[in-house]
Image 1 (cartoon, rainbow, N blue to C red):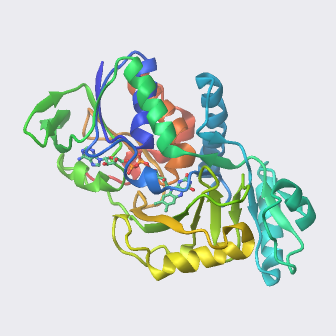
Image 2 (cartoon, protein in one colour; image 1 turned 90 degrees about the vertical axis):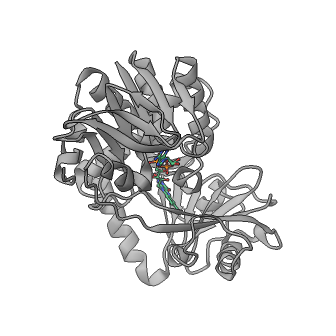
Length: 366
Ligand SMILES: Cc1cc2nc3c(=O)[nH]c(=O)nc-3n(C[C@H](O)[C@H](O)[C@H](O)COP(=O)(O)OP(=O)(O)OC[C@H]3O[C@@H](n4cnc5c(N)ncnc54)[C@H](O)[C@@H]3O)c2cc1C
């Protein structure tokens, strides 16, 4: 079986690796560089904190667990940090965090409520405000360095025989009758395949349209800043009422806030750093005083790859044999798992029951 994968983000490279381990010939086409689009800006927070309904929650929980499996399989996993998540709210919303913790616990998802003193044993550089008495700790959650993981997946896929082409845009899908039989590249070359798997992130509606498939997408903007190296030790993801941050290597910190997500409506690197970036850093300094005086090294914006109903789209397109979709938000958390489940589906027709509610039939029109 020959598979063409369109897109070299976390989903495309996870699928490429897993298809090669299932004995499928793989050719992957990426318009830019591997992991250079949404996956480069995603926070890589591995979580299932507020994800409903239950079937979606479980897919995310199993997505988190898949990282430990992949880490064992690879032997060396510098891209995976089982470092937990800390979250507090303003004192008037303390009840909300307790209720949220109860709901997650009732689903078997551990949440501890810690004193600020205990938090400082875990994260000594963090300053929890005086009026906060309880901090939620989500010990199963963690962080991934997605671009690095994408490199590791692509390297292993190549070692297993996959051909990976960067800076090679797919101009359109090729159809013969209803069947999708391959892709046409921007230079006019046609590449045939038994199956074409679209891992095209937020561009998925555009690519699907070339085969007469309507896939509604609802992308939203996200804006992150990245500091220079700071004299701080930080291992966890941290959520505060007005800013969220994570370690980003060599003392660097990545920070963002939902409030400013769409303040800079461009796509890619942001230069010069806008005032909202400086405001995000000022907020982070309140909780990580070691960031005081540390410059912002960069800022980036990306569109989230969100299907129209905010749920994963994984599977063969009804009415378009040969066309497989693998498109989701929270692809950091679920990417390695969905890549493996999709590979089993494509290679052997083994459809995992966890995907039952997430097939394309519910959302696409052909
Ligand atoms: C600000 C922000 C924060 C986020 N935080 C988290 C988080 O904490 N946890 C989490 O789990 N998720 C998070 N996400 C979501 C997660 O990052 C994405 O779901 C994931 O990266 C999507 O991966 P992908 O491979 O589908 O898309 P992408 O990484 O965008 O890859 C798709 C690739 O397809 C290529 N492509 C598109 N069209 C073509 C074509 N015609 N020909 C060839 N190549 C093509 C593109 O160049 C791109 O490289 C966040 C996203 C954002 C923006």
